[in-house]
Length: 171
Ligand code: IMP
Image (cartoon, rainbow, N blue to C red):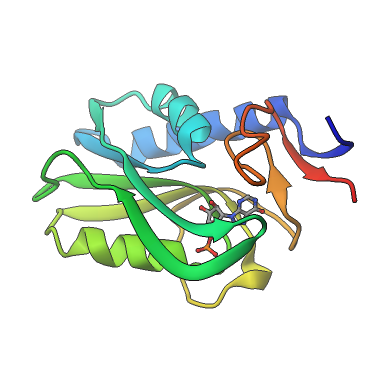
């Protein structure tokens, strides 16, 4: 393993995810939710967030990619579509990080054409300094500086997703 600096440790992440789960539970009391984790990066966050929400919910994965290495290709590709209709449903998209915002703008537009009752966005991380298009994040874990982060689901060339904390590769 190369040297990795810890950006946010596992305990701090767990605490924040619990808080987000409690907030979603409170704000959506009486509703049934569809969680839509955006693969691959959000699989760890989504697994923890789902267990922190005390409401009836189903999970349907959506796959897309716009990155190679550490840079966005600028073109968002769908790699896996939802397996059920979301018409009339309350949807919470679960993302790992909103960087330029291009992926989420594409995703949210795509989902809205399917006529859900509501679409909300939960993102573990946001890098506002890099934004190219505005994206409203309803449930945000942490705002971070413009650094490339790995771990807790996030990768560098498909590696490091299994780190239990968020880190930055030391160069
Ligand atoms: P955006 O379209 O530029 O907002 O990029 C969103 C996607 O890029 C995220 O879902 C991640 O997969 C990837 N990404 C952006 N920044 C990072 C990072 O710092 N580490 C790992 N992946 C990142």
